[in-house]
Image (tube, rainbow, N blue to C red; front, side, top):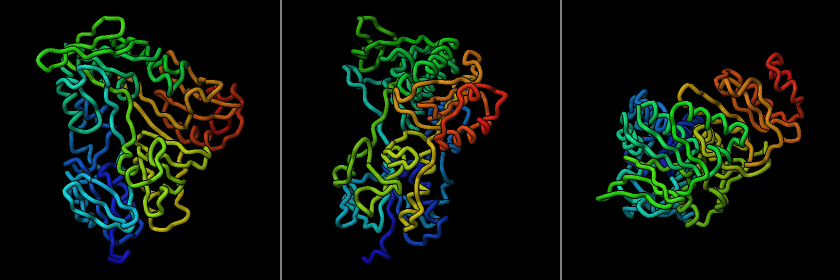
Length: 410
């Protein structure tokens, strides 16, 4: 089959995969598009799974990227419930688990990530839950009943959002975290304390510096979490949120360069010129930061596919240089974060407003330059924060902290 007759194949029927198909059509591509996914659900967004959908505020139809008819209307072949067994870059083919094969002209990997599993005895019992897919969210939602005892292992974004949903549903919640504060690696001590205070104020039992050694149970059903000091936390369900790992097995087996994800250039092209990657799985070179970064958040899955689509169509100006962005909603706290800071990669935190009121902006600085900003219950400021990060200029911390100085004039 000639290259012109081969389709663009997208492995991963996720938000990223669906948005790539959409971007290809919007860019005028009229060739074949094959979108392959393991799940039986058509592509959907994941943030609602730990937010509105989990809390029962959003119905199921709202999570989907496109209505069912969109794929046929845009001549996108959607193959659901289909696992990919292997990729052959030399032959430019994708082999399916059922022994079928699809040739490609260009290949985009939007395989996302997988929850890290808890490596302790008893972790395979019923009632031990992870959150990645919509079915996972359904199972957790069913467990969040008034009076239910919910243990959450891991105080990252997923763990805290599940804890907030559980408390809102009337469950009794214990959060178990190995570090001293929630989100410590992401936010640092100064801002992590805000989230610790938030959850304590809403009745969550936070236990820091603990080690989980075993999940106890009876008749195959979990009943508690045993800690390193010998104590046990009773639980009707245990939600494990100890991070995710990029789904790189296919790429690695195909000989693509893998290093904390599939390594790509700023065009999202991998070490093979006909293969691209986007979303959670892509460790992409970012021209603003002049380094490779992998961002595990919705905005990357939403926006990177547009760049990948244009790059696959040969547009040389297709460069992904957006400043990372993510958000969370917990109880009455809404937050947006713009920028990128490595753990311990800052030397100063500047607050505009009082963190105790949970209505403030926090800025992380290094050498006087703003690396990231987080607005908490303060709105319509992400654009000026983003410009501060992009500018890389040295700022006056006093002006940054002064609410009377517009952010655009700092």
